[in-house]
Amino acid sequence: MVPLSWYLVVAALLFGIGVYGVLARRNAVAILIGLELMFNAVLINVVAFWRYLHPAQVPGLVFAVVIFAVAAAEVAVGLALFIAVYRRFGSSDVDDINLLKW
Amino acid sequence: MVTTFVFVVAAAVLLVAALIAVLKNNLVHAAMGLVVSLFGTAVLFVLLEAYFLAVAQVVIYVGAIAILIVFSIMLTRRVGAQWGNQTNPTWPFALLAAGVLTVLFALMVRGWNPDQALPAAEAVPGDVTARLGAALVNPGGYVVPFEVASVLLLAALIGAVYVAWGGRKAEKSTQR
Image (cartoon, rainbow over all chains, first blue to last red; front, side):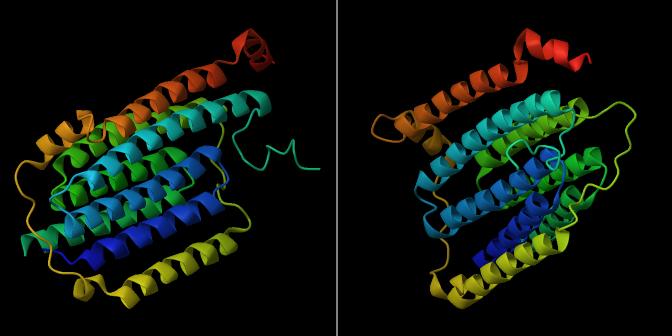
């Protein structure tokens, strides 16, 4: 079996890539893509810890299922917001959304 | 041996696809990178013997979330517009922050060294999917988080429809 640390390192790299996407992207939907990558890194960690620490019990899997539901809710609301913002500003570029900025 | 090989291939594909997802200027290509990355995660779940989660990953993430993202990319774009540069001018700082975070995580894993510190993983006993299903509807188990998740999804769906609909006023303002 692959050592646990390999999973943790892959998840850390994926999380880092996601953070870069969230911080460096201009388009709101692209920021959401980065957010999804971060969610996935967390899921890999949760499932890996379940498998290596308590494979006989289910709480780790229940936790992962709840994360799935929260991620789906987050994406649905986020995309709806971006579509509303696009309608208001004619752009989904976060630099153009500056009503609260002086 | 086979497991190691599959892990290395899946992890490499997953990370390269994730890089495509955050670096490509064409957002449709970026969304495809996200899809491949999510598939790679599903492969890792199979390797971790979480078969239900692997299937749920493909159905929920690849089947629903990725399609939603592709749809909203297509909805929020002017017809015929070029993609142009999709990166902020401050991207070096983003790279710095992400790099520092990743290095800190890697140092943490190295300092803890879970392969030495933890006992070897036991085998997964029995049918874990059946036990997960039973635990999710068992009043003594996890039925409350399960129901809270469903209420959250319902609330999110109603909210999403309300926010994205915008009513008749919004219809008029898009026709400018």
